[in-house]
Image (cartoon, rainbow, N blue to C red; front, top):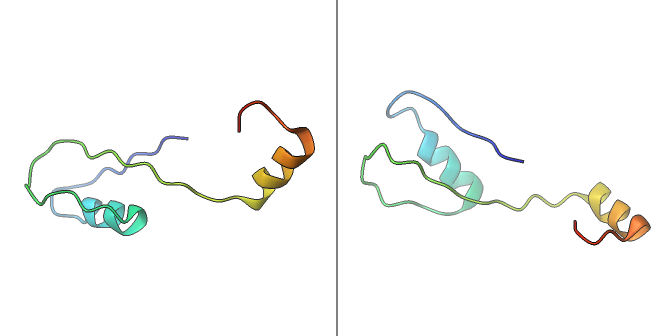
Amino acid sequence: MKAAILGLTQSGKSTLVSAVSGKYPAPTGSTDAHEVMVSVPDERLDWLTQLYQPKKT
């Protein structure tokens, strides 16, 4: 799944991403995109993986 956070300048987008991911980009004030990956544990997916044993999860 991919998600994007859009908003006005100085509205807290980077702060939100930092709070969720625990990664803090350098405060350059640039308009470059920051990309982070976050793992979200899901017990339902774990149960389905054990049940069906797919090649990929």
